[in-house]
Length: 79
Image (cartoon, rainbow, N blue to C red; front, side):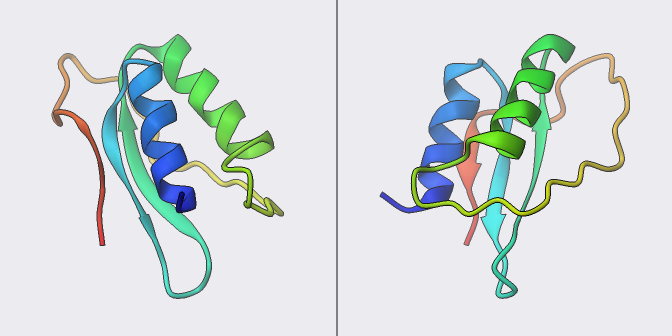
Protein backbone atom coordinates (compact mmCIF):
# COMPACT_ATOMS: atom_id res chain seq x y z
CA UNK A 1 0.00 0.00 0.00
CA UNK A 2 1.49 3.42 -0.94
CA UNK A 3 2.50 5.64 2.01
CA UNK A 4 -0.12 8.27 1.23
CA UNK A 5 -2.88 5.63 1.58
CA UNK A 6 -1.71 4.96 5.15
CA UNK A 7 -1.86 8.69 5.85
CA UNK A 8 -5.35 8.91 4.37
CA UNK A 9 -6.51 5.97 6.51
CA UNK A 10 -5.04 7.52 9.66
CA UNK A 11 -6.76 10.84 8.95
CA UNK A 12 -10.09 9.08 8.48
CA UNK A 13 -9.55 7.00 11.65
CA UNK A 14 -9.09 10.22 13.61
CA UNK A 15 -12.20 11.78 12.07
CA UNK A 16 -10.22 14.47 10.25
CA UNK A 17 -10.76 16.00 6.83
CA UNK A 18 -8.06 17.04 4.40
CA UNK A 19 -5.70 15.83 1.74
CA UNK A 20 -2.15 14.57 1.23
CA UNK A 21 0.13 14.53 -1.79
CA UNK A 22 3.58 13.11 -2.48
CA UNK A 23 5.97 15.57 -4.08
CA UNK A 24 8.64 14.87 -6.68
CA UNK A 25 11.21 15.74 -4.01
CA UNK A 26 10.24 12.74 -1.90
CA UNK A 27 8.22 14.69 0.64
CA UNK A 28 4.56 14.74 1.54
CA UNK A 29 2.44 17.89 1.68
CA UNK A 30 -1.15 18.28 2.75
CA UNK A 31 -3.82 19.99 4.74
CA UNK A 32 -5.65 18.63 7.78
CA UNK A 33 -8.72 20.03 9.55
CA UNK A 34 -10.65 18.85 12.58
CA UNK A 35 -10.74 19.06 16.36
CA UNK A 36 -7.44 20.36 17.79
CA UNK A 37 -6.79 17.19 19.81
CA UNK A 38 -7.12 14.92 16.77
CA UNK A 39 -5.03 17.27 14.62
CA UNK A 40 -2.28 17.10 17.25
CA UNK A 41 -2.53 13.29 17.29
CA UNK A 42 -2.16 13.27 13.50
CA UNK A 43 0.90 15.51 13.72
CA UNK A 44 2.51 13.08 16.17
CA UNK A 45 1.69 10.16 13.87
CA UNK A 46 3.15 12.01 10.87
CA UNK A 47 6.29 12.96 12.84
CA UNK A 48 7.05 9.64 14.47
CA UNK A 49 5.26 6.76 12.74
CA UNK A 50 3.90 7.33 9.23
CA UNK A 51 3.48 4.43 6.84
CA UNK A 52 5.48 1.24 7.39
CA UNK A 53 7.82 2.09 4.50
CA UNK A 54 8.34 5.74 5.49
CA UNK A 55 11.70 7.12 6.50
CA UNK A 56 10.88 10.26 8.43
CA UNK A 57 13.80 12.62 8.79
CA UNK A 58 11.89 15.83 9.47
CA UNK A 59 8.30 16.97 9.98
CA UNK A 60 7.36 20.61 9.54
CA UNK A 61 3.90 22.05 10.14
CA UNK A 62 2.99 25.58 9.10
CA UNK A 63 0.06 27.92 8.60
CA UNK A 64 -1.77 26.57 11.63
CA UNK A 65 -4.90 28.43 12.66
CA UNK A 66 -8.27 27.96 14.33
CA UNK A 67 -11.31 27.87 12.09
CA UNK A 68 -15.01 28.21 12.94
CA UNK A 69 -16.11 25.39 10.63
CA UNK A 70 -14.49 22.79 8.40
CA UNK A 71 -13.58 24.07 4.96
CA UNK A 72 -12.96 20.62 3.45
CA UNK A 73 -14.80 17.31 3.37
CA UNK A 74 -13.47 13.77 3.37
CA UNK A 75 -9.82 12.79 3.41
CA UNK A 76 -8.30 12.30 -0.02
CA UNK A 77 -5.05 11.52 -1.72
CA UNK A 78 -4.13 13.97 -4.47
CA UNK A 79 -1.95 13.06 -7.43
